[in-house]
Amino acid sequence: MSSPSTLKWIDLWNQRVHSYIGLFLLLFVWVYAFSGLVLNHPKWQFSNFWPQRQESASESVVRIPSAPTDLAKAQDLMGQLGLSGEIDQITAKPDHFDFRVGKPGQIVNVAVDLASAKASVKRIRVNTWGVLNSLHHLTGVHADNPALTRNGVATSIWSFALDATCVGMLLLVTGGLWIWCRRKDSLLPGFIALVLGLLCCGCFVFAL
Amino acid sequence: MGLSLISSGRIYRWLRLLHLYGGLLVSPFLVVFAVSAILLNHPSLQSSPAEPARRQASIDVPGGLKGLNLAKEVMRQTGVTGEIDFFSEQAQGPRISVPVSRPSVKITITADLTAKTANISTRPATFGERAIYLHKYPGPHVANIRGNWVFTRLWGVLADGTVYLLLFVTVTGIYIWYIVKSERKRGLAFLGAGCVVFAVVLLALIR
Image (tube, rainbow over all chains, first blue to last red; front, side):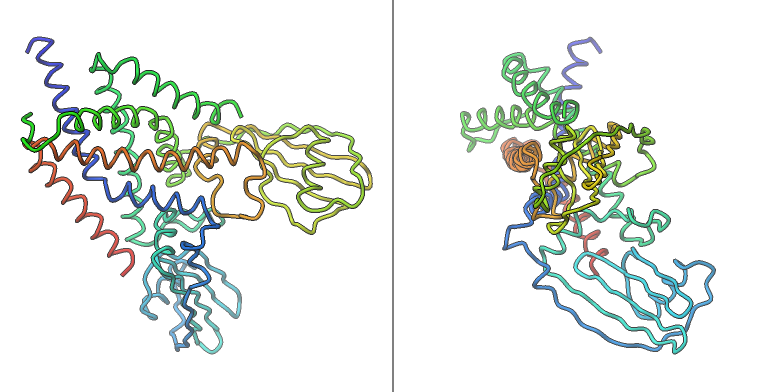
């Protein structure tokens, strides 16, 4: 293949890949973008989901598990109580074993009395805005308890989707830069737009 | 690639240019948000923080100040600028701790108003920490004091702008793809596949 043909082939496939990645990741990008916008405006009343949460409580008799780790105990109890989600808090005391399970739209606090083998289950359900809020920062990484690793299957899948979306965005940026470089008529205005973005962003990253 | 007969050439050309220039303008912000999101998802990728530098300063804070006003006065007298991360509205001393941050540094001022001294600990941030800071701020927490530094408010505006521009770029991208007849089938396949994957993952999460 001669050089101009190779470049044309690269142009064609770069444009296609740029288009296909963008289309595939569309919903993921929209969810992250829109939920990020809402997270940055906690004073917006229409998205204020917490006051509209629904709480319910129940009690169940459980079998106290003899698992080797607190996480395994919590997972055993989750199974007994029919719960699913990501365990993000565990408090193990001599007479009490408490943990919290979360998934988009629902938080469940479980307090197990080890003496009576009774579990008090408090559920908090939130609306669509709460689901969006949760989707934005659901990674399975627990900043206040780094020892508690990602433990939900669905969380791991969503975490992978987050990685894929980010890598996809970086590929879109790279592909877009190539498309711009190959359009001679757009070089100058494109350069101005790019430099403007770099200066604005760069000031915050490097100068403040 | 063949063009659909129904497409308006001028609209297509303009939207294509706006997609290109909008994308170029927003791309540095997208890189910061994407990289920081990966680091938030995988904290082990972050490099170790540097050791903080410490210094002392003399302060003389007028009586009667409390809350954010007190924190800002202490910052002014110690020559510290940045966003106050949190501070109780009722705090009035004599011992206070003011956590301040900027993208490039994390600062803690521990002041004894009676002894009129302040210890300032300044820790420079790694590149990853800067990106994560910009990803998270202004954010939803401590909404009543968030944006107490002008550059936090300005970054909030830029973050909003990034979202709006990104949404515009995606919508124009859909139009640009759809107009080209020869790309519709393949594009629809990728769009459909992405929607199915999204729906399946979301259902698995919330079920």
